[in-house]
Amino acid sequence: DQTSAAERTRRLLRRHMRTRMLTLEEVAGMLAVTPQTLRRRLHEEGQGFQSIKDDLRRDMSIEHLARPQLTLQEIA
Image (tube, rainbow, N blue to C red; front, side, top):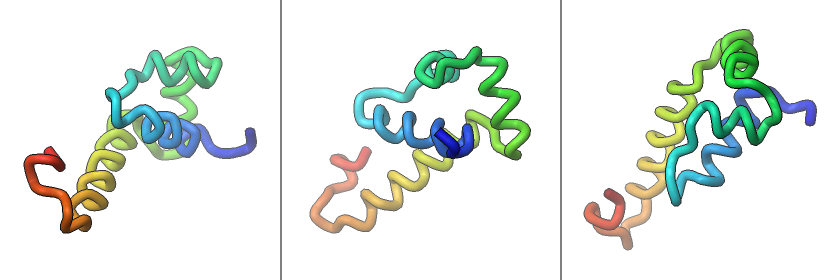
């Protein structure tokens, strides 16, 4: 897989987001690297694990808010 570590991390987090947010350790395991290696690769790409999670939460919130058929309670 030639995609960046940040993109692979983003894809895994997004795929599991509906059930629960994965930890750095879980994502690293799924990518077959140590948590330290994943952290280092993300840093080399100018990303951080927490900022990727925050960005995904924001993006999902915006997507849900754009759907008028959902109530705020359903979105929350």
